[in-house]
Image (cartoon, rainbow, N blue to C red):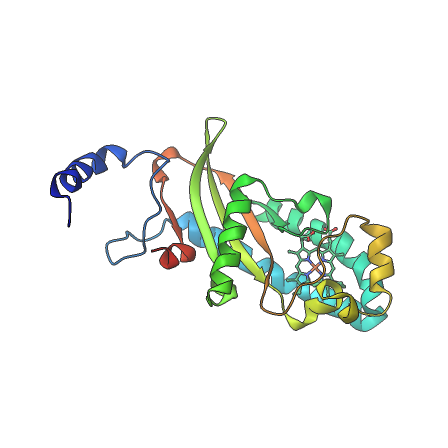
Length: 217
Ligand code: HEC
């Protein structure tokens, strides 16, 4: 049975809660206003970088094999993210729940998003579509935050797959460069990590939206 008085109370309180950053996640419905322009900007930047990085990696693998390409990735990935950050006005980096580079460890917000991406991927959502954006307040400053999942593709397996799938010399090179590597054992289709972008933004945009929310009851 529905409890009408408490429903009415909730309805009366909703407008009061509207500007607060603890807003419950919204479902994407016809009533959802169009997403702010910054989300499209962040999405464009997050989508532009991975193919560029993949092109550099493929070229390096073809030229000198996967073990030597590890050095290229180590140097090129952070440099390309820095260049894209300078160009776009977004702070751009990559993170993973099973990170290789110790600096690619997610913060609490990123961790929640990555965990939600994993749940959605396991529930059958196409991993390339998984994204999450939100305006959050951090140390009194509103931050626009955007994340986009990076699915494991066949190319990735030679450096991120199970021990028997790693390319020639890859395991040894990884051991030298990343003694605390946690980024192997992935299968095609799993979420390898995510692009994560942020920039300061005005407080009045506190809304959140994610493909994952569609899956919540
Ligand atoms: C030639 C080996 C190689 C291939 C192929 C490769 N990676 Fe990586 N990956 C690396 C290395 C090395 C790092 C650590 C880079 C650094 O130090 O920043 C890394 C780091 C990452 C990170 C950052 C988080 C972390 O674990 O440090 C993500 C995300 C990632 N790779 C995704 C992918 C995806 C997706 C693919 C396939 C499209 C892929 N990688 C293919 C070697 C590779």
